[in-house]
Every structure is written in C-alpha cells, then in structure tokens.
Length: 86
Image (cartoon, rainbow, N blue to C red; front, side, top):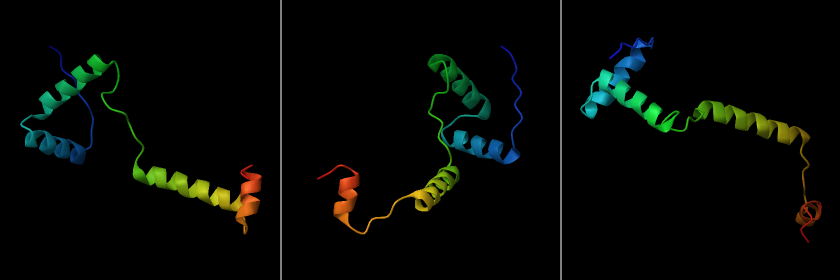
C-alpha cells in the first residue's frame, strides 16, 4: 500500500464526503474505487463535459457571429434556392 495526497478545496472535499457517506462509503474508499476504475478503463471512468456556463457562452458567441455575418431571408423560396432545395 502507498499514500496519496491531493490538494482540493475544503468545500469540494466536504461535498464529496457527504455524497460518499450517503452511499455508505468514506472518502478514502471512494478515491480507491475511482483510481481502480481509472486503471480498469485505462482512462477516466466517465466522459468529461463542459459546464453549462461555458457551453452557453460559446453558443451566445456563435449566435452573435452568425447574426453579424449571416444572411437574412424574407422569402422561403429564396432560402430554398440558396440551399439548393426546390
């Protein structure tokens, strides 16, 4: 056996301890399970996702860019023509 030390915010540690305690585990056991899954999966045992705020900011930026440079249509026929749908 070996010891692993990790620096983490107190708030995160307490929240993790509570979540694990709710399923009958202590923090040490939760970390062991996580690391064993990393070994088994040969990577993270989940797919990381961006947070909603980052996704929303990206979306807002793309929409603003599209509005600035995009073409507006007042006639569906004109839109279909540009899309080669006739």
